[in-house]
Length: 114
Image (cartoon, rainbow, N blue to C red; front, top):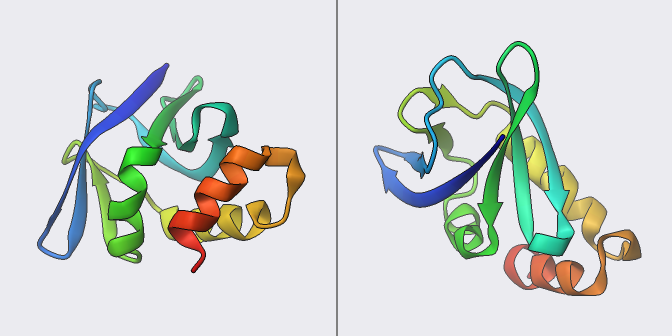
């Protein structure tokens, strides 16, 4: 199942992310992947049987960059553990790596690598 972050607010030193689907019973998997074709970073949640994909589309990236390091809470009930370590690893890996596609690499550089 795909879950899309539709709103992000910075409150009380945390990024509070709100999604289009409920997240009750889901646990942070502390892993991220990308969908370079759709310009999205994906954080994985575990429901005990399979992974659920939380999409951070390009429009959310500026909030991520601006508040880098803040605790990230999804729908008030799931803390996205290791989010920053995973994101930083991906950004570093994407820089100069043609496997992700030129458009995605350029977009990531413009937002996260100054």
